[in-house]
Image 1 (cartoon, rainbow, N blue to C red):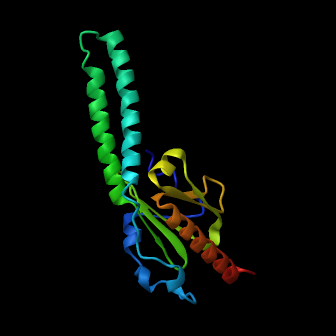
Image 2: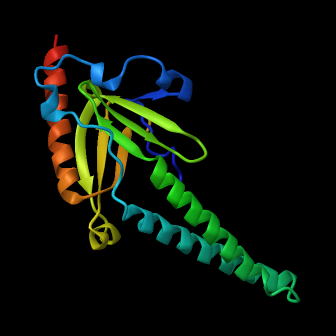
Image 3: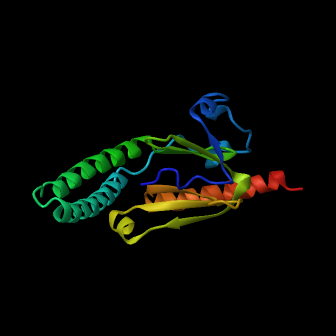
Length: 193
């Protein structure tokens, strides 16, 4: 449940203060056909909440099991410790998953991909298209069963240079992959020497 794992070197990080300054996204850029590729701010598919809640329950089961084993060895007169840890971890994990879903958004701008997410630490990432190396879609078995997909944007850089948009519909992921590819190719042409 690490919210900052998908920040990248090829992307510019903005703090809350920096992101509130500057221009309105609708006033940015002067592309030849901004309506062809840009989007309004979008959120993730609601089904991703259940994926994240499921992961939280699995983590809670592991924590509860470990707590029960340790409590059984050290304090056998208190058998409630394992179940209590499970209940608390499930509640916290579920709350985190729901808040994370509410915090997640992304926007395809004329010159960059903008991501905004995080519960405890708010992360805003701007990925300039000129830094994009390639774009993948990924669907694990649970994502496939839930009808979800993730989009991974790899950027130029050396330190974990990728950004992931989780929990989007497969057709939307394919469309977004095509849009971002076209915008990356277009931006390379503008910056070519």
